[in-house]
Amino acid sequence: MSASKPTAATNTPTAAAIAAAVRAGTTKAADLVEQHLATIAAREPEIHAFNHVMADQARAAAAAVDAQASKGHDPGPLAGVTVALKDNMCTRGIPTTCSSKILDGWKPPYDATVVQALQQAGAIIVGKTNLDEFAMGSSTENSAFGPTRNPHDTSRVPGGSSGGSAAAVAAGFSQFSLGSDTGGSIRQPAALCGVVGVKPTYGYVSRYGLVAFASSLDQIGPFTNTVEDAALVLDVIGGHDPHDSTSIPQAHPSLTQAIQQDVKGLRIGRITDLPEGADPDVQERLEAAFDALKAAGATIVDVQVPAFTFGLTAYYLIAPAEASSNLARYDGVRYGLRVEAADTDAMYGATRAAGFGDEVKRRIMLGTYALSAGYYDAYYGKALKVRRLIHDDFERAYQQADVLLTPTSPTVAFKFGAKGDNPFSMYLCDTYTIPTNLAGHPGMSVPFGTGAEGLPVGVQILAGTLQEPTMFRVAAALERSMS
Amino acid sequence: MSDRISAADVTKVARLARLDLAPDEIERMTAQLDGMLEHFADVDALDLADVAPMTQPFPLVNVFRADVVQPGLDREEVLAAAPAAEEGRFRVPPILGGEG
Image 1 (spheres, rainbow over the protein chains, first blue to last red):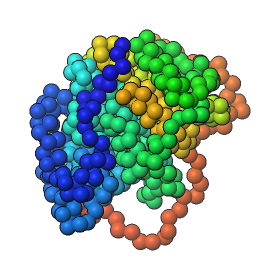
Image 2: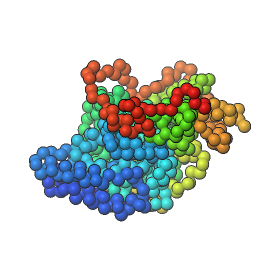
Image 3: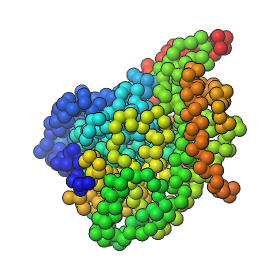
Image 4: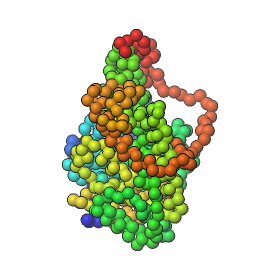
């Protein structure tokens, strides 16, 4: 178990350094884009991180950024910085598929708020990344367009559901990427691919234009090589959006400033009743993380979160219930696939049967069942109460500790097909990430050395509502301890 | 095959969800849903009588915006993405009188 940093792009400059050079005109965005496109051309056939590479649009956007800089206008804090977007974020006129046959070929008539924010900041979108269909999965094996492979070992999964976004950063296809996290879909692939991944507080980043999976759980966040890059990206995409009525109506403090502070005096919580199941190599890296933070001046405290263990149960009733409602919109009328039939009712059933893959059908069925007459109280209603218990247990823990540290994933990246056809064995991948989504709290995964077979291991940092600044201070301290 | 969920239940739910499932899919789905519902029994021992359900993670009430006319989506662009459109509207098969 080495402590070496397995990030593919360790020597990549920071996003801030790139933007500074492009703003000053000493580096051309056009050259940066060509470098990334060349990397994509070389390795994408093997990795399959993308559903759609936007070479022409990226070149045009880079030329516009360079033109602004040469005229003395400021192209923005992400000037010339390349980004890949999970293919469940709407891009006007550019295919947005959710890796589903039911949306194959659909071109949205509007941009997601995060897309507009990135473009206004001068970032260059290089493509749309692969995912488990409608973000339902933990390996990207559920994509209708074939799996993404882990850049560290192409016989293994990149994690999921944002596997394409994690792999894109790990393979150097883009400086950073965006994913969405409903139950761990940013943090788990970040851990498996050896990059930083952040799920902010629910409402921190606008969901407008993010294709909905489970609306009370979904949140957009970045994948980056460094904690500093993640802070910069969140400073750009975070904030209130009138188009998303669940977005928090206040400005967020700068995370790039927060990471300047050390962790002296911070209380780092160890959850003593955390569900078991993490492999020894993963557990060993978690212990090393506690040691590193202690050496940096933090205090380790024991806390309990008894309801943590019920996260999977509550999640696999609440998320499918919300999904069954959200995915009702795919009916062959307004967009996407239609299978023609004699009347609308027959058309709905035939279209949805042909357009959705197995896992999506399974979750729609589970959610519809949990919401149906006679079962609502026994399943969905009970799950909402368990969600409250989880939230309240976390809140009590955060009175004793500033952040909590856990494994991100119980294992390093696993082989394709390793989880077999028992859906629940795949669901267990998200044991440590799911409770945070239910609570609405922020969480992030930081690469922290390697485990079995030299594969990356991530450590997860959890914090209370809007405690991103503290969470990022701890992440930066862990990263510094590795250098 | 189970007292938790039967093939007849699954057939009914598939109908509610507007999913045409083949007989072998119904069979497979019945076994898989049954397996999941078995896992969910782990919360049965919890006393939830006095616990309020949690429906949203960051409670906000009465989210209003200013009552100002905003541009909507471009009609032609929206209809161009539809499987079928006619005279500025979405076109669908007959709602009544089909084979269903």
